[in-house]
Image (tube, rainbow, N blue to C red; front, side, top):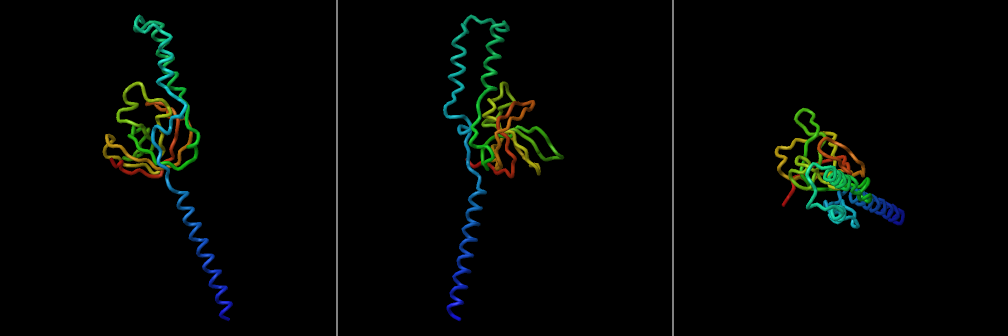
Length: 184
């Protein structure tokens, strides 16, 4: 009888241990990975170098503003920004990323769609940052934000999906789960 109870106790302990470990593993899998804006730019990509290389092909000191040559250079510089590559390793990953909100869509008094950008004023002033520095956020429930001057953290699942808006083109989309105040 005692031997049977010992086996039953051992089996119970094993089941409890497995359940606890499985619960711990699931909790770890649901944690949001902190991501910085620099991490959203591929390590081997340098927009400044590409822009400088392009500009060096022109005699910029003698370009007349509004000329065909000036317009061509501006279009090529804009295309360089638009073609900025994304970091695909973050596709379908739970992320936590800081930034500033640029509201796009509202439902009543809640923001449902917005751009998350690395610095205040991005997308409001021209030109907007490159797509790998703009995140399009979709909040199913919508959020109330008292002050868009303050940075926040967004928690959600990131996808490498391009989204166009009147404020700029985002190279990433986050399906937002929650926001938190940014702590300096």
